[in-house]
Length: 417
Image: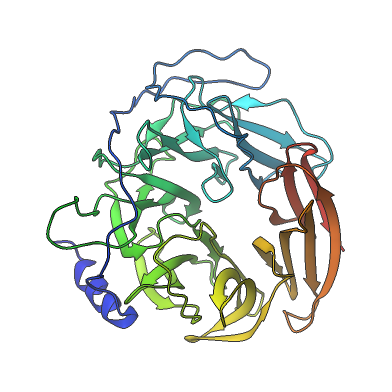
């Protein structure tokens, strides 16, 4: 018997989960078996060696700009994004002013999701190991699997593996990645519990699953379900609690169909310790807004968040401090067209960044607080009249940096002072 089953039942009662009315918005079929090889891929400055992995059908579409950037243990910035079926990695040693040539993470091309909500992720081990995860797409809409590759020496990537054991014809996507005390943790949204059309009963949204590797990403233990009824197309937000534990925030489907947010605290092995409701806007919508939250914890343990919801009949980005089942200091961020905000906490400094369309151009804007979110001052960082990714925030050498990738300007960094 699963030891978390009883805990999930108790958690479900607290959140008001259970049987939901209405059909799931997920559909599709068609995943295939993944290659589980361990041969090396590309190394910086070396040609790629072909690796026989499955190649799903590619589809022509708009440019995929979804990019993740993290600070490596050596202080460099490392970014992952997608071009022509390959996850590419670039490195910057000068805070994002210049970037190295791209390294291929997967040597054989795959159809990969790389929009802002569903982009590749990167994390680092204590000895400089590089871990990358992404969502591979299949021909049918809303289907695919979660992929993972590792570079034990920080340079050469092993052939990708599929993280989960489930091969049912559904969507496994919107992955997130974290190095925890016991290993490498991958989390994702999973559609395996969707009820087939014409069947009795209904299941709204997706389940939230995780899998842990205790051998540096060589293999993953069987996946486990953390929660039912997550909103199926919003990114997951990860943060480190004051004591180092992992916090997970996501848009959740509360009864009867309210799309607010929940926060879970995870143990050292990535297992579920607790879960609580985080926002209380009461947005009832039978659809996914494709707009996930961001979460950060300041030095005194205060949880800060930004999220998109509808409140008082207006859809806006909001900032607030999450405390004991309530939200303090909630207020709108930016104007009516503000979107896809991110935030970071460093000591008592809180930074928020977002993009905002004025009808012709998209602006990159930010706010900075020096007093733990009590007061903010705004700043305009950049503008583009082309396509753009969602902005990200990170801390490097005591400086807060915003990073933004645009179709015309590429990947740039902006220091927030």
